[in-house]
Length: 220
Ligand SMILES: C[S@@+](CC[C@H](N)C(=O)[O-])C[C@H]1O[C@@H](n2cnc3c(N)ncnc32)[C@H](O)[C@@H]1O
Image 1 (cartoon, rainbow, N blue to C red):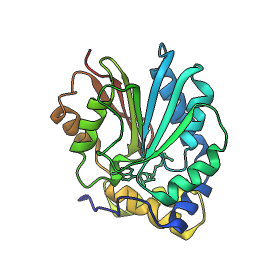
Image 2 (image 1 turned 180 degrees about the vertical axis):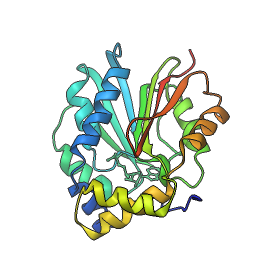
Image 3 (image 1 turned 120 degrees about the horizontal axis):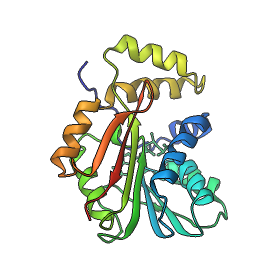
Image 4 (image 1 turned 135 degrees about the horizontal axis):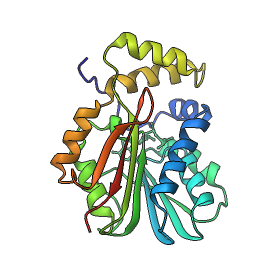
């Protein structure tokens, strides 16, 4: 099945609200656990979460990582960031920044680690994303990028949406289906990593029937 793009930034308040209200507990915790494992040894510094959405993952990371680590969540959507600010409240060591990738207000090499979940499939062109990952992390920084991968057919996508049952909100079901069609295949992500000059540094693989994970460390 050919990739079919979906709208990039989730700036419709109703859409953002449906996303924030959905139950992503299991998949977000699984992603956060993988980040914590990959970040073992990172005791201080800035961890950036690209496309942080309602900030559920930055909050999980800040709770689990050592006290010297701050997590900065970046998202281009004002609606998502309003929900993220509400969720973060006064939580310690979480900052939120509204910025449109790849134009980020972070200097090159600023981050001790770079993570991102479910952003990649939103991007019409993934190359600037991988350049940003490479530029933001300091040498040797852990990188963890999770996303959906595109199923072979629309029928498979429909079945995945039906079986996942993360929410019965019609907007969320619509977006989930659109996201599966917009996602990259594992081979496509391997090619992106190779084109970014990171083939020796990052590994790409499936971690569930619908999720892929890219992990490793930036070149030293
Ligand atoms: C599916 S959500 C994922 C949210 C969160 N990472 C999670 O896993 O729950 C994707 C997010 O990426 C944001 N986004 C899309 N394109 C972006 C860009 N170019 N720069 C920054 N954020 C972007 C969207 O606004 C949306 O909030």
